[in-house]
Image (cartoon, rainbow, N blue to C red; front, side):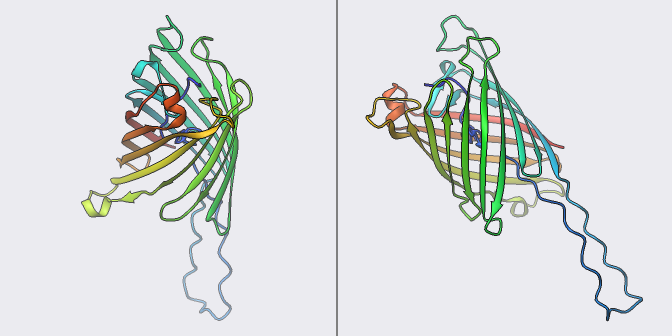
Length: 282
């Protein structure tokens, strides 16, 4: 059983992932210059302005508070709250991540009153089929500076996401260093922009994103099954994001982690997680 990151969205959202990576940040390539005007155009017609180029990079920084520490359905830190700063940097189709996790009370290490974890990840993504299908592959490392909060390890991961109303996705994280097991997942999510409906003032936005994800345990949390493959958890989420400016936003989220076979085998039940945070994009 791993004693690491919360299931936000992120990285569950992966994480893994991550919420995933998890749950990354997609970047668009610079637009090409428009074609020359047709020969029959009148000489006094104004020239069409070239579209402003889209930048190839972005940096996003967040500060998040979680009411408790849950990782792939498993509770950590005796249900104590955790603080998680993060930075995500993207250049074209390459994304690098940093997530920190800091809190008090480690229920897996008696006497350890402070928990600290630094996670680093990087991945490449490629959109195909007219940008409808995005394939992602990367590596995730978990580092515990104090040497007692957990065991340093790393995973490889892959994910496929389809751009549609429900935005279905499927992925797999596989630990190849300490735990030698995998966590698979499949989910759906959709973002509803309610800015116009609420008639918010110019520059302000509000979106609501429900999500649902099914987790599968490949001998990662529990090895009691003969083939090491069984249901792990269901993660249901509802996120609200309020944009204050084009760069600054705040968000609130509720998640329900429903325990299935592997998590039940560890003596863990359903868990509720509340999240508040702020994000600034450069």
